[in-house]
Length: 216
Image (cartoon, rainbow, N blue to C red; front, side, top):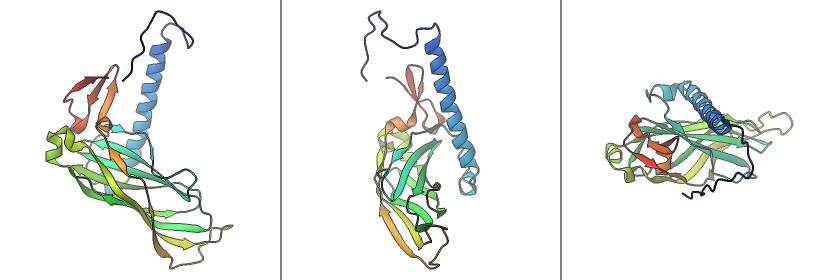
């Protein structure tokens, strides 16, 4: 990581005493609030709460799995728990003449993980957000070797049933519909997904254990 040498001069920004500390506190509060929101949302889903995942340790920033101008816009957030990763797939249907039902994301599970649960989005209507989830458990072998954590969700596909609808009213015109699928980008699992920043250090949060600290 590149570091800028401090030469004693200031070329802009807030020079008020304590401004930097207040800014860092504000950023930390925002991250905590975001994690609290995710934790509440995940605990409200019966299929996930039944797994007794424990406290949410970290949530990644959204990763785009499609281009923003495509008919379906999908992003992924990785939620790190003790021994599990919950993949949250946020979906938007940009087609006003289609309704998607039972939308779910399937993929090849990487080595070092096993799939233990999935939750599909029951109905995805025009321009209204929906979500699907997949839970992977970290194997005992991967827990013992950091390299075992690294991998990718490959052959990622959005599967769903399409039903044509009236673009003005949203009323479904085809009760039967048909099955279809849409290819998505792969999702990488990197070592950075398991680290939390704490001041100038990053702490590995895998399994809730502070196994090591790295100065970044």
